[in-house]
Image 1 (cartoon, rainbow, N blue to C red):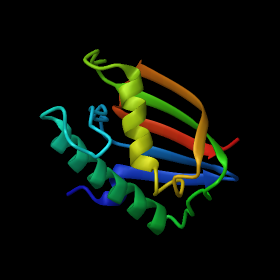
Image 2: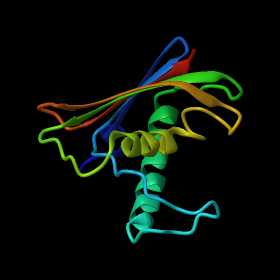
Image 3: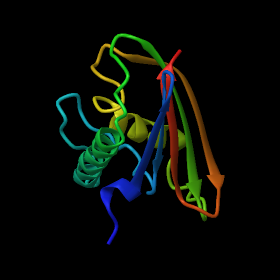
Length: 136
């Protein structure tokens, strides 16, 4: 049986939070401003987001890692690792999805903003996502 803690690894060094998610990221889907779905996959995406937000929150709480404060400029670095790279979505949709997982959990409030994004999609023996979020 896999535990929540085994699915997410979290650590913090100074003003940077480092996460490892042992999953492939579902790409973000298009919705209206009111949250209405434009695509049939949107419900799956919302459920995936809620599940991973809870897993990240659990890992941060049990690991004693405090979220970054609101009202500060942030950087967001992510590496999407695949055993076989699926080119069925654009990298920006994966980044948006990962950011959505972190908002309100890793960094607080809507008054934080991301000024720098670095993203890669690479081949690896281990599939998952490496995230680094911190203050600029």
